[in-house]
Image (tube, rainbow, N blue to C red; front, side, top):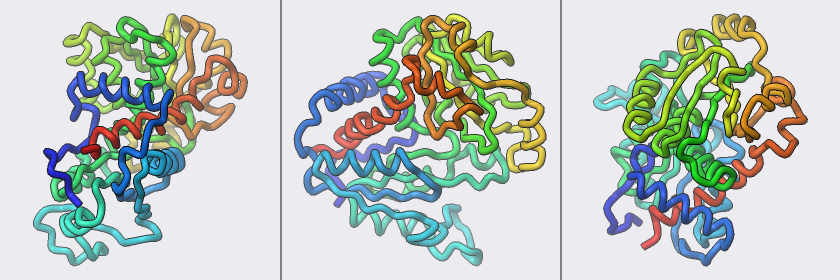
Length: 338
C-alpha cells in the first residue's frame, strides 16, 4: 500500500530540516491539547521489535489507534526468525531470510514500517554503522521509522524536545546536562546522542558528565561540536557530576556502556564497580538553576536517581513518557497523511 508521496524515512533527527522539527513540535503540542480526528483511518503500520520494549511499543500502538489506524506487531524472538542484512552474503548461516525480501513483502501489507533493531554487542565499530536499520530503509517501499538503533533514538529525542519546550519555553541559551548514572544493565547512549544533537540545533548549552572510560562516540561528539559552532550553543564534557549540574536548567540522567569495554561484559562490570558515586539526589539537583530531571526510563530507583527526586516536583520523567504518544502521532501524520 505504498503512498504516491516522495518516500521519506526517519532514521535519525538529522533526516529532518530544522523547520520540519519545528513543525513536528508544534503539531505534537496541538495534538496533546486536542487529540484530533481519525486522520489515519485505513492506514497500517508494521511494528518490528528485535529487542524488548515497553513505552515505545505501547505508545506506538496507542498513537495509531487514536488516529484511526492499525498496527501489525511482530517480535523477532517469538513471531519470526533471524534476518540477514549483509549485501551479497551467501546465506549458509542461521538466518533463513534476507531483509531485502522481508522488506519487499511487508511493504505490500503496510503503509510504514517502524523497527527497533538489536545490536550484535560484539564490536562498537560495527554496531555504530546501524547497518540493519539502514538496510530496511534501503529495501522498503514504504517509510521506515527508527524505534531505536545502535546509534540513534529519534522518537525519544523528539519527545524530549517537546518536554523541554513545555517546561522551559525558549530553549536557546538554556543549559542541558547529561549525567551518567551507574546501572548493572547499562542502556545504549542513543537517547543522549539524539537529544544532544537536537538541543544544539536549538542553541542550547550542552554538558556531558561521565567517569573516565565512558566517553561518547568520537564521531557523535565531533558532530556535536560542529553543531554548537553552527547554531551558537556549546558542547562541553567533564568527569564530575556536580560540575555538569551546577547552573543547569535540565539534568538528564542516563546510564550508558563504556565503548572501551564494548562487547566484554567482564571488563565492563569491573569498570562499573570502580566508577564511584554517580547517584542523583536532592543535594546534587539543588546545584542546578531550579533544574528539572529527565530520564528516558526504565530507571533504577535509588541506584540512578533517588525516590524523592523521581517522585518530586523536579521530575519530568512521566511527562516525557506521555509525550512519546503525542510526538509519535505527529510523526505518523507527517509521514502518512495524504
